[in-house]
Length: 308
Image 1 (cartoon, rainbow, N blue to C red):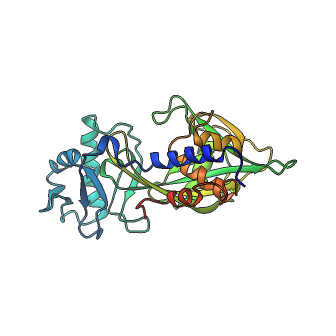
Image 2 (tube, rainbow, N blue to C red):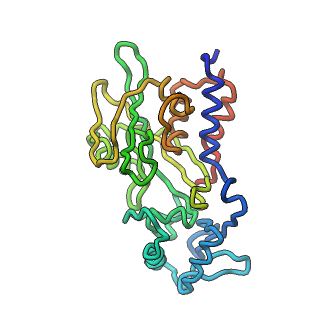
Image 3 (cartoon, rainbow, N blue to C red):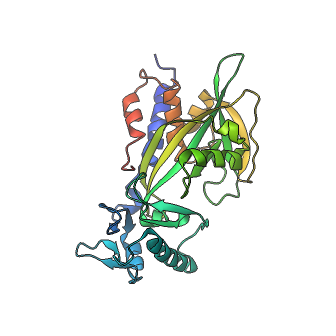
């Protein structure tokens, strides 16, 4: 039978999933305009808020509007390099006007699907502006207590100085998928940069699937993400090191405490998208079992988005 309190926990779990797939709220009346790249993708690569689409359309050497109102990149921009250069000019102009906060100087791919040829590259801070699919790697760093056999999960607390989600709980390691690296190469890079995990140990991370979500963010932009999930078993007694100043603390938590944090019961909250990855981990480790109420609803909801 499910443990006492399973009903309250599941209620919180489903609320976290719903928050990551909230297409309502402030953007209820917001129209999104398809972003079409002729010759590079058969379907739209993104969906731009209508008001922002007007701003993009003003760059008439880069975009035109078709009869259906879609935002279409000019066919003369017929290579990834040409399109990327044009988008760099557009986003730099938006940045100068204060419309692209949180600039990272980090390029990510815009494409029809993860394994499709890139249509163009764009500054990471502008990805949600164009409503393109984004990808990341999230690593569950776990270990077993050798005396009790209990599974424990490393939990990071984000620095209060971070511009996004300051002070919230996070994974041991997580990062946006950049241009030019495979997910596994990105795991190894991020593991060292964020937690001081050496390359040989990081390379033992196992790919265990993906979660996905579509959400309208606080700027009324469409965030469509798929997160590649990895499990990394760490030696008992090993401790992470905060390498980049983005983590306030690392702590090793029992799964009961992790579950309470996700459910919003008596702990600080996780960064929103981390909840999906942690829930997937709790399902795969057998912490959440088919005996729990709404089990199948939860499991199916972790991959409910359109991300490919």
